[in-house]
Image (cartoon, rainbow, N blue to C red):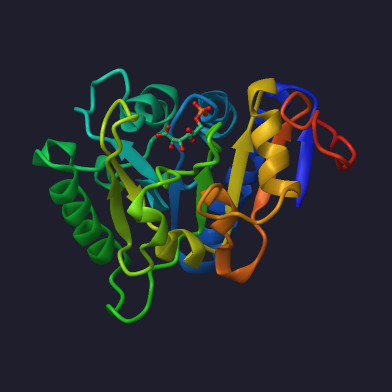
Length: 250
Ligand code: 6PG
């Protein structure tokens, strides 16, 4: 399902509404919601709207936040996805501190941080090792190289179907990255991509309409619970799509 929103502001409003609906339904159904936040710049507007419009009405005390990926930097580093989410959302809503599960990047190596984070997720979900924990939502971005989370082209993490949490270390990256693996991402009930801006138009067309080349475009591997992911994109990002769906109301 692809929804094209007029502009980044409409995209943020639509994405915040989807997140709010998933939190509400999940807490009603299961008594809690566990959602994975995306990093990067695109989600900032969504997180701000979520805090501003839904900060008082959502059951934050029954919600847990984990991170789809994280750079190996301290939490107050300008490149920290946790730091970005804290400033845009988490410090503005009444979510209990122990419901925010940041990646322990202070472990010194990306492998140690990933292994520690995986242990934390197993204990959070409290399910047996043979089944895969099921996120209620995984929010994802799309990199201009076709990556999502930190599943980068050329990274072994793309092929890892065993770990819940793995890592990516590439010379071209500013920092090594801890990332959810496809085992965790594809076990989610829903996966929603947020894509904004003309700079993503070519890669969005390649991912959605081009040949299936998952090693080149790891985002093509996202299939939550065996279904197609959901795409919330703005008109600039959608401008190269051959048959763009009609623009949804903002
Ligand atoms: C990260 C993200 C990454 C991001 C894409 C898009 O840590 O950078 O998790 O997957 O979503 O690179 O980034 P922008 O939203 O900044 O374009």
